[in-house]
Length: 415
Ligand code: GLU
Image (tube, rainbow, N blue to C red; front, side, top):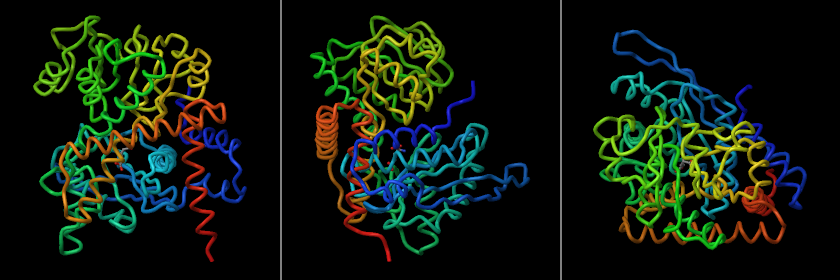
């Protein structure tokens, strides 16, 4: 079976959501396409003195609510369509949590694991230069995504600042604390996943203490989500990374797993759990499944075997539309990506605000503001779902699209 094209998924979700809205058909047509797309082919000097040409993208989906915001991914399988989908989802995500941004996404087709540190830095600085025609604190603010992190954001900030002759921290978020990053940003996405999971559990009269959780992914999202879930009393029975997973029915000690991961850079060989395949993890008997890795993990093929009662989408697009339909029919409560993983961009917004004001907040304040926004957004999506009798994903899309369309209505069509 061909891998699902997530841009088609995003368009399908959009088409379904707009049926429940009364918006100008012209605006619907415009929101269905990205506002602008940049494709860059650029050379990078490699360690063996050869020159390799890489392809990268930066797509802006909408600027109706403010500057565009969204991460940059480094992945060998990246395509323009994937970036288009992720940019569109960023637009709805920012609107759902009520932060004044439009959606963007960027990516470079590469396998960062095969690049040396110097090659990665060369690639990042050159890509940043190539997309600097779009990037600015007022126009487009990148952030980390799959395959990138604070190190890459630091290089982007420095490259942009070198071109301007002064430091411009607000041009990118997810930076190290030392150069204008925010407290709480590193675990913000995972924190949001846990906050929305607690809300979903309440709707099922369950508490974290009664909950067995399986987490797919042990990166920027999965690792903090697993840790925070355990801190809230949940039993994390399984986690995985790209190489495979570990399982312990009595629960894994996440700080201990983290220590193993820090030393070995893999979960494989962790002594206090059985090893399991990624596919098995998804099908475990658990209460909550948190897919926090890549898109298209749960498909029509494995959806019938999913046992979780709640799915918290830490990743973007982890369910195919067919899987989504099957799981809804089974009565699974799905916390959709554009709500569930919005904690990351929310604290990115806090970081940007702090950078613009050169005034930094404490961690407690950030975590509390994040929690309030996630709970409020969850309740607002839930309300739309109840009022319009929709599933949570469609309700979140409806809420996001409606907010963007309203902004466009007020702004009017130029000229
Ligand atoms: N890449 C993250 C996402 O998909 C964060 C984006 C941001 O912080 O701008 O939401």
